[in-house]
Length: 110
Image (cartoon, rainbow, N blue to C red; front, side):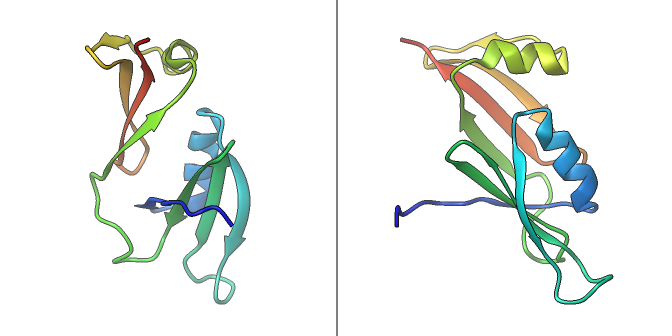
């Protein structure tokens, strides 16, 4: 087993969040509910990058910021119609998901 860190993001509607993250190339791996009608806990993945999306109150705070390194930030910028910012360390975009979580996404500069 590889060791890894998996950020947990709070979401109000896991299905809507999964649909939004699909635009970033993430796919749903699994979903858990203790009983029908109770909050969902979902894993999404893009290659080896994983995120947990939780409808449970207290699992994560609003306005969380995560950083994703990707091979092609330009494709993401085009998908979301946002400009790419040039930083000394990477070309980046910043997005907010439907729940207000912030994602800074960058392609490192050579």
